Every structure is written in structure tokens, then in C-alpha cells.
Amino acid sequence: MKYVLGIQTGHDAAASLVVDGKIVADVAEERLTRVKNDSSFPLNAIAYCLDFAGITTEDLDAIALPNEYLHPSVQVFFDISDKQLPKEKRSIQSKLKGKVLQYVMNTKRTDTVLPLYQKPLKISPTCQIILVDHHKAHAGSAYYTSGLNEERVLVVTMDGIGDSSSVTIWKGEANHLEALRSWGGEASLGWFYSNCTEALGWRHGSDEWKTMGLAPYGKTHPGALDGFHPVFKDGELVTPHEYINGGAWLDHSAYHYHFDDAYSLEPIAMRLGREDFSAEAQRVFQEQTSEIILPWLERVNTRHLCVAGGAFLNVKSNQDIWNSGKLDTQWIYPNPGDAGLAVGAALCVYYEALPDHKHELLHDAYFGPSFSNEEIQLILDQRGLEYEFVENPSSVAAQDLADNKILGWFQGRMESGPRALGNRSILMSPLRNENKDIINRCVKYREAFRPFCPSMLYEKSTDYLINSRDERFMVTSFAVREDKKAKIPAVVHVDGTARPQMVKHSYNPRYYDLIKAFGDITGEYVILNTSFNVKGEPVVCHPREAIRCFFDTGLDVLILGNYKLTKPRAPQL
Ligand SMILES: [Fe+2]
Picture 1: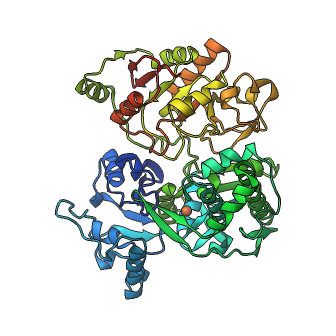
Picture 2 (picture 1 turned 180 degrees about the vertical axis):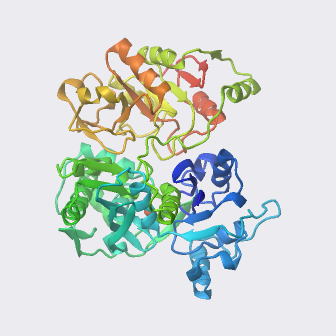
Picture 3 (picture 1 turned 90 degrees about the vertical axis):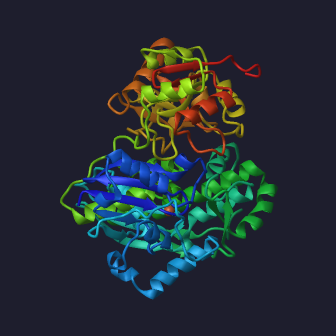
């Protein structure tokens, strides 16, 4: 087995290509269609993955699908014969289940048909179609990227729900995942947190960042949210919660779930105040997550933890687990939501076929499209834009940041996952507190309480952070040292924490050089890094989207590859 294509259909559709056990391409459909959380069949993402590797669908050894059922569209798009289907999926009942699910998800008709302009993608007769349970795919994304081949590992997945599970527990050992426990929707802490998010007027399934960002501004009210969430004790579910009247809201081609709990929670949010309500939701989530994970660490007898699933985007909860002192390793897959399922399914298929092939630690997440200088210049010329060629973009950018300019930074392959990691980033100096307000107000167009994160040199990270570890993906927060809080105020949240990306030269030389040059000028080896987009839009992928964002926001400077564009500062800045 060499080529495995992972395909996530549904919420956060994505495709990923694994070659000889390594991720070589991975992109969410939203980045290519510009529809946030796009749930369309990911034709564009599939095409990118295959183009990058220089192969066609006929070269694939396997297609990995993170679902317990076969979505009818997969069979139609790939022209899959009944003989190639997994045995358990050939039954009439199984096919009916897929069609009913498609109908329920409001696709309006039960048969997927291809228009004339969409030819079926041919696969070889030997290509295997393999279904991987949703949570197993989450578990695989975490475990098979951890590099923990020799150790015994606890693997935990948590989300709203997927394939009838919301929380699953696994033991990873000797390149193999063993299922230990799972719970269904009645145990969903993800749904609880999302219901609280909806009660605050935000989207279930995409705006949970806001609840988490607002929480440190409030105080907790233990007991105020009793009856709205499941209760775990010592690693077991002791009080299930019945989520009633669930449904999906189709919003610009993306599904957002809704439960009636949101209606009941809204008056509590109004009574407590938004900040206190967020703080209590966060407290409950952290308390319950700890009640699951910490006892299972003891049962599995390990100090190594791997996690994935959308619930692990909660960086404060991740920090809470780390601060328990019960871990030597906390590996959080950097794309833990459902867009990471394509990777997880493909890795599970590969390593179950070849268990003796040891997996490797993931060093970076630059798996998306890139554009050469020649391509960028052509795009700029086609638009008649003025620009200059800069020999050393890192040092030029560092000086602009030291001059407190707001910089669009577009380099190399786009990141997979929700974080900007220095290739599709908006950057600014962290030295002035007002900079976060400037970016929120004039560039991102979003709420004033939303925090910003630092990118820092790895070797300087202990100068700034307490009880930290090598963390490259902005997936957890750490306390900031008291003497540094006033030095880098724009990247320290109100609770005194920061969610860092630590940068080593080998991971991203150009970005490392930028931070180092900024530190050589200012004395602080830290910059403010936020994703290159405005509120509600996917992160930019193509240079034209970066150019559009540059001219549509208060950005001062745009550096695309070696090309630099500038414009006068907006008066309100
Ligand atoms: Fe999930």
C-alpha cells in the first residue's frame, strides 16, 4: 500500500493524501471554495491532493472514509462498483441508511447525480474502499502523528458527535489502537459547550472560540448550569444528559446543529451576564474533561496523552490537563476538528495495513497550496499593482513590524487546520497593548475581547512562559511570566496566559528569521500572529485573496513571497 486518499464529507469537508505513511497534502474544501465550513463534496480538495503528488485517482491503493456508512455521493463520484464496496456496505439496508441520512441532511433528493460537466473519477479495480469510524479517525490523527511508537499512550477523542459517539477512549501501543470505551450523544460535552455558545448568539459548531475568549472576563457560578450537561466521575459517565429536539441549520452550505437547550440557556446567560455565563460554561467543560482524562491516565498506566476531536480546540482546557502534572507528553493534533478526519482515516488505513512501519512525529502542518514568485508576479501584473522585489523578506518585514505596521505575510504552502503558523498570517508588534484593538477593529472586524497569539523563537520560549513545553501549533495556552506581561501586552490574554507557536529554524526558516530579526531590533523575540482572513471568512489560500484582504482592510503592508506592496495608513488607525 502506497497511496491512500482520505476524504471527509459533511461538516468541514476535506481531503488528504498519505504516501508511504506520511501526510503529503491536506486541505479543507473551504479554503478552495471560500465557503466557511464548506460541507460540499470536496472535489477541489481531492484535485489539489492528487495534483500535488502528480498522480490520478487510478493510482490510488485505497480511499479512506471517516464514516460508518458510505455516503452515496462517494460511490457516484468515484464510479465505485458494488464489488469494491466494503462487504458490510453492500446490503440494501446499509445503502438505505446512507440515502436516508443524505435526505435528513437536507440535500432535498435521495439520489446523487452527476451533471454532464462532472465526469466520474476512475479508480483502479484493486483500489480498496475502507470505512473508518469517525472517532477512530480522530484517534488515528492524534496517535499516528505523535511519534510515540515505543510508549504506551492514552488516546482520547471528544466532539459534539460523530458516528453515534461523542467521547472515546483508546490505548495506543506498538503502532496499534485498542478501543477501551465510548459514549454516545448523552455524554457530549461538545454539544453542551456549543449550546452555551448558541445561547450567547453565536454559531454552534464554529464560534466556540468566542465563548472561550470571553470566559476569562467573568467569574464562575458553580451549579448555575446543572442539568444542561452530562456528569462524569472517575472516568465514567454517572449522569447522562438528554439533548432534545436536535437539528441542523444549513447556513451558506455549512451545517450548524441546534438543540432546544440553547433556548433554555439564553435566559440564564442574560441573568448571569455574558462574561459570567461564559466563565461558568468553561469551568464546567474543564472540570468534566478532567474527570474523563485524569482517571484514564491512571487506568492505562501512562503519562503520555494524545487527543483529537473538536473539543480539544479548547486551549484553556488543554492547559488545565497539562497543569495537572500527570503528563510527560500532551500531543494535540493541530487540526483536531472534523477537517482533520481525512488525515486520520488515511493514517488508520495505512498503519493497519502495515503495522510494522513506524509512524513519525508531525513537525509542521504546511500541507496546502503554494505559489512561486513567478506566479505571484504574474498575478500582481495582471491587476496593474505597484510592488517592489525584496531580497530578504524576513528582515524587511521585521523592520516594518518594529515600525508598528500591520503586515500581511503570505509564504510557501498554506497551513492545514485553523491556526495561522506563519505562512498565511497577519502580523503586528506585540509590544503595544493597543495593537490588539487596532487589528480587531480595523483588520479582522471582530469583537474587542478576542485575544491574539504570539509566535516566538523556541529557544526563547522559557523566557516568556511558565511550565511550558515544545509546542508548535497554538493548541494550548501557558501562563506568561510576570516580568514579561508588560513587555508583550498585545499577546497576553486578560487571564495572564498566551497561546504560543514556538518556531524552530528547521520548521520554517523564513518565519524564524523574521522573528529573530524583530527580536534583534526590539529585544523581544515574539510577534503577534493571527490568521490571514477577516471575521467569518476562511483563511486566504490564493494570492488574489490576500490582495483582496489587503485592500479591504487596514493592513499597511503585504509581502507575498519576495514581493512587497504598501498603502497609506488608514486615518482611523
Ligand atoms: Fe468529530
